[in-house]
Amino acid sequence: MELLSLCMPEIEDIKSAVVIIPFGSIEEHGPHLPLGTDALTAIALTQAVGQKTNALVAPPVYYGVCRSTKEHAGTISITPDALRTLTRAIIEGFVFQGFKRFVLFSGHAGSLHMAALKEVGEELVDREAVERMAICSILDLIDEGLGLETKNDSHAGELETSLMLYLHPEWVKGGAKEDYPHFPSHLLVKEKKKYWPSGIWGNPEVATREKGKQFFVYLVEKLARIVEQVKEQ
Image (cartoon, rainbow, N blue to C red; front, side, top):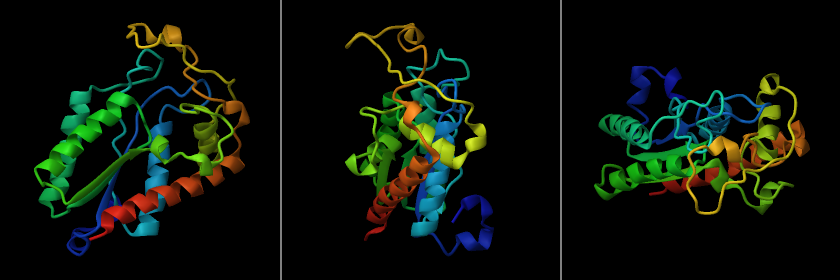
């Protein structure tokens, strides 16, 4: 079920449904993938999971916290405070309407971004504003069963390029070479683009549409299991 398509009377009958909120980012994804890759992936996965589990899929939050890529062209980052405030307000709005169970799924897996979501989740669970909540990113769903060739694939590499070739091939503009960031160990640096000019973390050269379909089906199954856990009494 998609919230955007429902009418007022339909909401009254589904207050026990799990609410899935997709999160993304407007962020560079190398020279070949669209800025909305994280959001587009999260939307597609949550819509498929909503159909499979009968969960209620909320409209996406398109903006996220982008620490390492904010200097790259096209990245529009918000602060952790802004993400916490918005996330808390959205969930409290659903709670006011009678919903109590939530899955926050993010196509963007930045550390500060995910920490902000988890801080809000912990707060709401601690004060019993919600009955049950799960929070995860797309990277949390990756395991050996997914079948990635590339070790440590993370950003605009094999996984995301394959998914975009499957979901939105018209928005994939050519290819790109394998690359990885070279940040100094443990040292915080201001000019992050200097250590990661390509914005690629992985190997898009081995990406294919066929892999994208395989990855998508696998990720839907993994996320659906998390939704089912949240549904359990």
